[in-house]
Length: 600
Image (tube, rainbow, N blue to C red; front, side, top):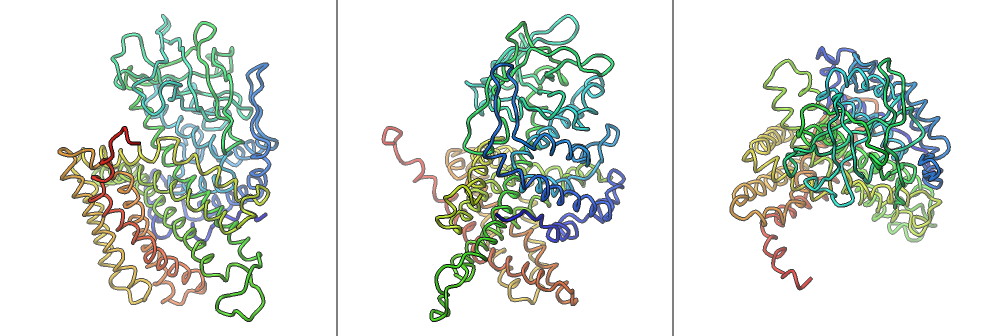
C-alpha cells in the first residue's frame, strides 16, 4: 500500500497566492501566524498525518468502533486513543481557537490545510476534532460567560470533546419536527428529554468528558424552527471548581452499522431516561437554530475539506498503483513490451481528472478560508462585510461541489486499480466507502444547492453572486495578458464559464418568484456550475503565478509546468461541463417536472 504524503509544496504555493500568509500575519489578530511559524506547523502536521494517522486508517476501518451494551460505553479501534493524545500534545485541538482559552489563534487559512491532512490520512479520526471546533465556536459566540468559563478551555485543550445533536428518528433534515424537550428548573438549568440519532462521536474513549450541544424545545416554544433552543448537555456534570461530578442522564444506546468511516462511532443518544439530563441554555431561548448554524457552517466547510482530503489520498494511491502495474502494450509503441498503465491515455485522463478537480477544490477552499480570516480580523468594516458575504455564498458551493467531486475521484481511483480496486486489501475501496457519506451529512447536496439559490442568491437579489461574477471578470482581464499557450486556452474557456454562471444566475433571479419549481429543478446543476467555474478561477490564479515563476527562471520548473498542464486539462475538460450545466438550468426544468407523480 502507498503511504500518504501531504502535498506541502502545493500548500505553500496556495499560502503565497490564494491565501497569502504574508498578508494575514499583518492583521493584529493573526500576528503569531508568521510564515516561519506556519511552515513549522504544516511540517509537524504532515509528519503526524503520515507517521501516526495513515497507518491506523486501514486497521481502524477493519476493526471499527464497538458499542458495549453492558455499560453503554464505546471502544474505538486500537491506536486511536493514543493518536488523539499525540494530537492534543502537538496543540492540534486548539489550533484555530483564541489564545484567551488556551488556543494557538491560527487563521482559518492555516487550519484548512492541517485539517485536510487529517482527513486525507484518516477521515474517521478527523471527525472528532472537526466537530469539537464547531461546538467551541458556538459556545464562544453565543454562550454566557459562565458557560465559556466552564467548558471552553477544557474543550480547546482537547481534554473534553464536543458534539452537535440535531437529528431525531422522525426528523431528518427537517428540524421543524424536533421533539426533544427541555424543562426549566428553579436553579436556571433545564431537564432534557429525547432521542437524537447520527451523533458523530456521541460516545467514545478518547476524552474525559463529552459536551453535547442539543437542539430542544422549551414548554412555551412556538411551533416550527422558530421554537428551537440550544442547550449544553455534558456527559459528566461539572463541579464549581471545574472538576468532573456525577454522570449526567445521557447515554449512547447503540451505534450505527455503516457503509464507511467505521472507526468513527455514530451514536444513538438517549437523554432523560432517569429523570432528565441536566442542560444549560446557550444564548436566548428559541434562537437555537441560529446558534447551531455557527457549528453547522464550520462543519459544512469541514466536510468539504473531507472531500478534498480523501480525493487527494485516493489520487496518491491511484498514481502509485498506475506506476507499478504493468498491463498491455503502449498504443503508441505496440511492438514494445507491456508497460505500466500510467502510459495508457485513458488512465492518464482519469488521473488528471482526479488531480485537477482536487487541486481546484483545494484552491477554492483556501480562497474561502482567506475570506473567513479577512471577515474576522480586517480593520475595515466594509472589507469584513464583503468577505463575510463571500464566505456565506461559498459554504454551500464548497461543501456540495467538493464532496460530489470526491464521489467521482474515489470511484476513478477504484477504476484505475481495475479488479484490484474491488478488493478491500488494496485500500482503494475504503476511500470510496468513506467518501459516500460526505454528500449526505451536514445537509445533502440538494440542501446545499437549495441554500445557494434561495438564501444566498434570491433573498439578496443576487448581490453577492453578481459581485463574484464581476471579480472573476476582473481576473480574466489579467489572465488575458499571458502569452503561455495553456493560459491562452484557459482564458477563453474561463470567459465562457463566467458567462454560463451569469446566464444561470439571471435565469434564477428572473424566475424565482414566478416559477420557483423551475429554479429548484436546476439547483444542483447550479451548484456544480459555480463549483467548477470558481474552482477553475482559483486554479488559474495559481497557474498564472506558476507562469511568472517559470519566466523568472525558478529552479523547480517541473512543479510549475505541472500547474500549467493541470490548468489546461481542467479548462479543456471540466469547464465545458459547467457550460452544459447552465444549459440544464435554463432549459431542463420542463422535462424534470413533466412526468406525473403516479408514473414513477
